[in-house]
Length: 473
Image 1 (cartoon, rainbow, N blue to C red):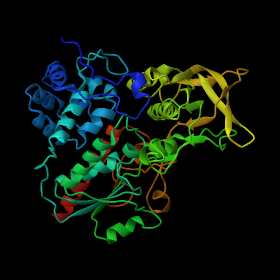
Image 2 (image 1 turned 60 degrees about the horizontal axis):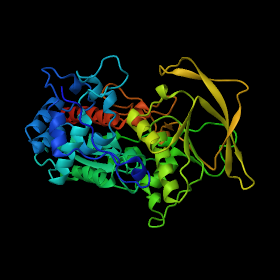
Image 3 (image 1 turned 120 degrees about the horizontal axis):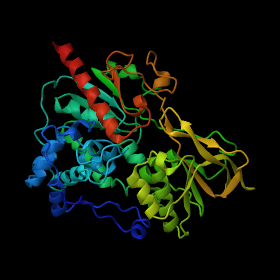
Image 4 (image 1 turned 135 degrees about the horizontal axis):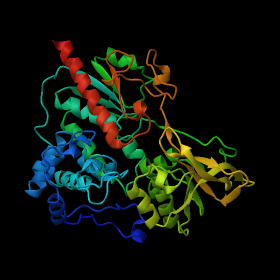
């Protein structure tokens, strides 16, 4: 069996000094070598491991035949965002984990598994380079139906694409000035270049999808008003855009950001290009990021780059209350963070912040922890050790401990049922407690992955299509 082909990466010192893309695209030669490693299983388990059910076996075979356009179109039959998913999808927990070449019993895919995500990225970028936007994918069956999609994050985009293929008129309503949701405001350009993001979203326009930006559905325009405007159904992809906090003393001091605000300023508002773009973001000489997920990695890696670009000696530390084994972040992102010079402090729990005379953070109070019994997530719980108090110098802190449901719409919509966390309740068909109103993504399942949100959007679209078809019969 041939050794797995890993894509080239920018050297750590070079990439940590800019927001340029880190993982480079496969060359044609590399893609062919990696694709030929695929065993072309009779019953490929990798397809079942993909939340959007891409025919992985087929598109990889097409790559081996140098039918790159065919590979792209095969992916587009199930997923409108091959390049995006090739870059941000946690394949090691999904399709690659199911690959028969993977060493069984591992919590994530071993290196032997086929690099399905990198091959998907190769096919996606081929489609972009050759403007293969998937013409002919649209089937005009329900051309007299109109559906509103609220939110242009992954779930909303996937739902819109599926509906548009069937001839449904889809209008996506977005509260911000740019589309993409968490793809746009949460993921840095060095992981997801903006030209690729914008191109693949624009591909939906070729299917007939329309976008209305800077429009908030809720108080200014109630949900039910959309039905009065002639929409046959509504999909809610509101996301989980409200940051969670630690609830400790001093958390309101200056220079303490939520990861949500920190990344939104940098990614959506291009603060890393200030003053070329007008929105600034503070940066410190000693930055501490609290959390262990992908968002914490993104925030820390952004902070380190901004320190370099500001002329500071890089000094960014991630605090996590468990060990590296329990970190929910992708192994790839943890590895990149380490290579770039980010420090990690494990088994540390912040208990408060100390400010200076100007009201700006200067220290973080902490306790050391040990691991106890597993909690509901299956991970061992952190147990603070009494008397282990210590302090960490810090002039800028970023809190990346998760997001909560965005309730701008749900709180003012009578009859729309939510759980105790504010997440919308749906049935097996992704339908809410309101007739002809469906939902998916983080507003349903809590903070999840891009590909999981895409899968929910597609399931909701199928249910909406069934509903629309029944209403016409």
